[in-house]
Amino acid sequence: MILYFLSLISVIIFHELGHIIAVIFCNVSEKRGFFDFRISISVKAISIHHKKFKKPLKNATIAFSGPIFPIIISALLNLYIESNYVSMLFLLSLFNILFLHPSLPDGKNVVNNFKKIKESKQ
Image 1 (spheres, helix red, strand yellow):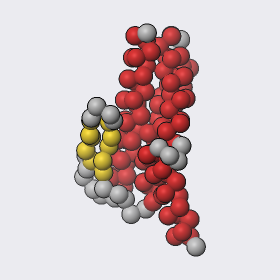
Image 2 (tube, rainbow, N blue to C red):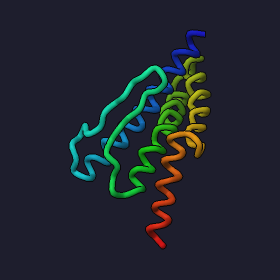
Image 3 (cartoon, one colour):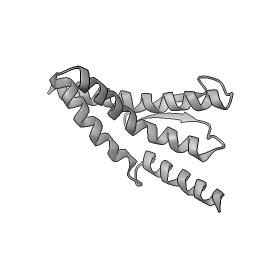
Image 4 (cartoon, rainbow, N blue to C red):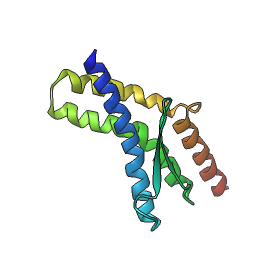
């Protein structure tokens, strides 16, 4: 049971770390401050807040990177380390892809930004 909770906490941390890394890369590319974001932690959620970027693709990438980053990290760990923890981490990371559903914040953000990209091309 403790293995499950440790894996779950790790997936949450990797999810938010994915957003943070993407925000930092986008901040550097737009010559903003390196740490021009804030982390909000409440009982219900952990979230990363940043100023929206001019290009919707950057905003979509930031939203997309949260659910994808834990999958990448856990898949790489799974290649090199055989343990119950890493297997559980990989399984929970795969469930993390559900955050890209359009009714959830990350998925909603991706869909809205792709709509903006599509509108700008027309």
